[in-house]
Amino acid sequence: MKPKTIRKLQLVAALTIYTIAAILSYLSVTEAGGGSGGKYDVYLVLDVSGSMGSPISKLNAAKEAAIYFLREVDLASNPSIAVGLISFSTQVYLNSHLTSNQNQLMSVANGLSPVDMTSLGDAIKTGVDTLIQEGRSSVNWTIVLMTDGIQTSGSMDPVDAAQYAAENNVKVYTIGFGSDADTATLQEVATRTGGRYYFASTGEELVQVFGEVARAFVSPALHFGSRILMLIAMPLILFLPEIQEGVTTIYRTILRRPTQVHPPVLEGLRCPECGHLNRAAARFCGSCRASLVEVGRPCPECGYVNRIGARFCGGCGAALKETGD
Image 1: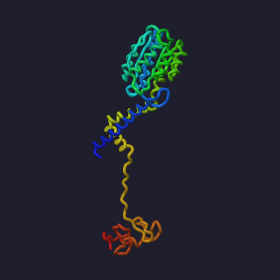
Image 2 (image 1 turned 180 degrees about the vertical axis):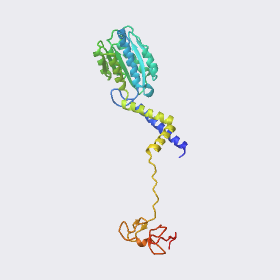
Image 3 (image 1 turned 120 degrees about the horizontal axis):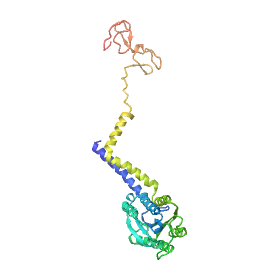
Image 4 (image 1 turned 180 degrees about the horizontal axis):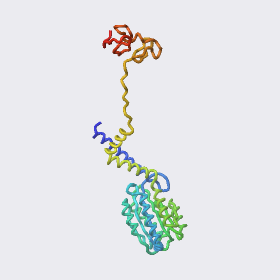
């Protein structure tokens, strides 16, 4: 096969592996909380009220958790998911519309700062309204809400906002951060919308919770399986000739056994009784023990029967002609 043809076949194989990896990555998106696969528009709704800045490590933990969520979802490899960011205190702020730009979202999350009170119900309603306005059709709409306290401002009750979310098919996952979080209200919001309530007492636990929520959207087996296939496919595409040459060299020098050269079989004496082929100098058949003396080469001088191929007579020493008599 020509080298160019081999190279084309190798590229086809590598691209096939890469395509399979991309498909697995697409299929790695799962129904949050279990179920069938699908597409998702997700809004992270984060509490940035004054209590989140006391101590400041609480807000830093929330930023770290949001960034960890984005890394786990891996928007660059999961086009089925789009994420936006909303923050709330006394006012509700739309920090980032739905996007697949992971770096942009991380930058926005890093820029959050604490101020004022907590408009929990208004934040939920804003998330729902934004999903209605810009969310994709036939896509699962989801809010991931994190707060460290209770509602202290705003015009809409959180439970009423949850009912509004349920009526618009928006699922809300709630996360209570710290001992001051309104656990009962957050549980009610999650239950009414078909979501789930999580609790984190420390910053480390908050990061873990956000990771758990992210993995509810992505199947770990398919997600990491697709990454492994991509790691295999890319070197194959870029370095196939070198890989082939290396494998061939290893095969030839280590794995391939040298071809055994068998010595030529000398002409022997075939037994007239059983047909067994004996060595040329044999006097008796190795199979049936019949005498092979008469099968040999007789000397023209003394009649002594010599082995086939003999140059001198074993009886009288006379030279035997090549053709024999």
